[in-house]
Amino acid sequence: MPGPLSDPGPDRGPGSLDDPGLDPGPEPGAEPGPRASFLDSLFSLDGRVALVTGGSSGIGHAMARALALAGARVMLLARGEEALGRAAAAIRAAGGAAAWVRADLADPSATRRAAEETVAAYGEPDILVNAAGANPRPPLGDQTLEQWGDVMAVNLTAPFVLGQRFGPAMARRGWGRIISVASQQAVRAFGNSGGYGASKAGLAGLTRSQSEAWAGHGVCCNTVTPGFVATPLTATVASDPVLCAALAARTMIGRNGEPADFEGVTVFLASRASDYITGQLIFVDGGFSVT
Image (cartoon, rainbow, N blue to C red; front, top):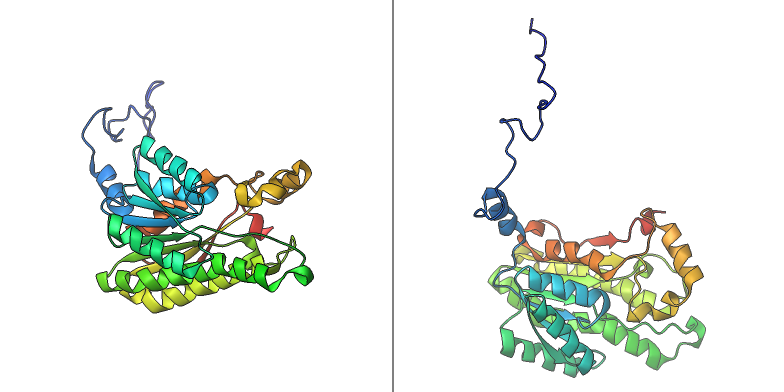
């Protein structure tokens, strides 16, 4: 029978950091070891090019910044020239590579032009992020055909146009990523969802169609679904402290989301780490969707 365990003494118990059987990791300033190399092999985006719509503010900007700091060269695409300039400068100040192109995504011809300007500046994108959104919410019975068309153009047609431009090229190269930002209203109607909810449900469907078309050639297509996040797009709700508190209470984590909450999932979905994940609706919502 095995004998009794020996007393490790007061200063060194089994499994303590002083135990010579445990590796405490590299000394500060040491050369990167195999663990760092492994993480780089999974998550590094060195040499990749990303196009991020809606990258001038909110969740889109956080996603663009994360991609840039993981090594990608990032092109921001939005309407506001001043906001684009500030956003790109902030990414560069943080150590990333970023430029911008202005276009109104409600206009398919302007969207196509911006796509070609991106290619001229950085080459063909390896990563497309559809984070731009339009969110007018009149009561559905009052929504005009023009309002409906504008919402669909930005939230659904622009991702289709950009996917059609870049998805086949990614497939020919054998690798690519398309990441779209949906909404809780893609799966449930609340808060006067109207045309916005319909467009986001369509975006989730488009993601599955893109995955069916190109995932077999290495192009993984997924949709990220936020809970409530205070951004320029949600300014009306964000200005109501009672409603904000109620939304936070509905989550399991106990708070509303922040743009920074999307940094990790963006790098994950854009990297080699997600090679076998495609066609999915991924909720980043603090548990909001399951309460």
